[in-house]
Length: 66
Image (cartoon, rainbow, N blue to C red):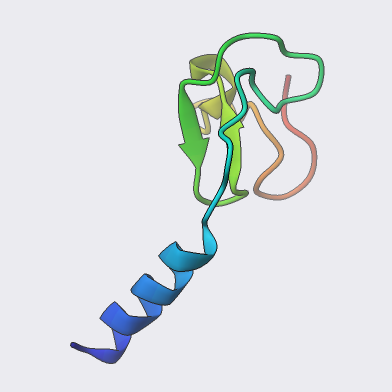
């Protein structure tokens, strides 16, 4: 196993999230969770997971555009 593969296995092992929330983790959103963002390690509805063409959550730089 390559060094990169071992690193990926290590990172995935640290992602142990239990339990998965039922609602989107974006502020004041009550929609059901549909997806997970690996950049900020948060669960979002389809609307708030969008990063392009309009960023809808705060995982990159600064506040989201919503």
